[in-house]
Image 1 (cartoon, rainbow, N blue to C red):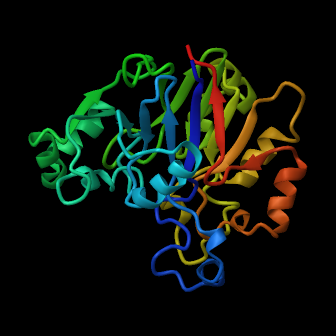
Image 2 (cartoon, helix red, strand yellow):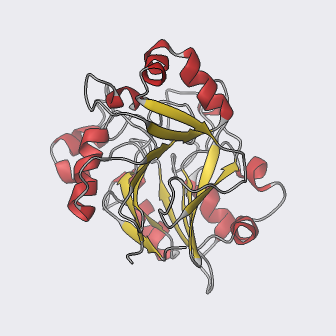
Length: 294
């Protein structure tokens, strides 16, 4: 029987890249070179039984399904969706499952209780539930669940602190036999997430082999016109200072959820050269990882 394939469908912060309304050089460069385009963070998982599972529901889902199809001949029939939290870019594509677009029925949406509550409170999403388009299914933090019977992998939702004006937030630990992949696109600070551990100790405690982690901003001077304390994320520079160069036995750590201003979006930037010289990396749309079925 086949293994479990995890495909990266999006690597950008919630606004995508180029970002709407941005007239800076970083976004103008993408508009003239489509190969640099990035979509909001998302993963597609094909289970060992052929079932398809989406992580995050972004408004760019149509483009992301094309990426998925190029890797796995995905036919857009989903068995489940899992949503980490309720910020723009992670949940705003839920309406695409309705009768105006895909006309889905009985689609399981795995999420926390606070995300399920928000779905119930939002009139656009509530009608999806009432019409049996989606079936919110609440997970328990830190308890593993199987997205659908026989899919060959499990997901463990790991609570991590992030702005909670709409819902709580979870990283997702995707577990195959002998291999675990962590998807953590958003968190506020390493100090709050790690609770006194180092990054290596925390990842080791979770048994992580591959970590796709928050790389929203390169450093704290990136947004000259914004108060960055209002949109907290650990910077990549801080993460590199905590990690240092990659060592033997380290997990494969790659950054995603890049803001349009992040110089890592530029493949010729010295910042990207610094990152890769230290042994770490980025993920790009279409990258895939294979897990052995449970």
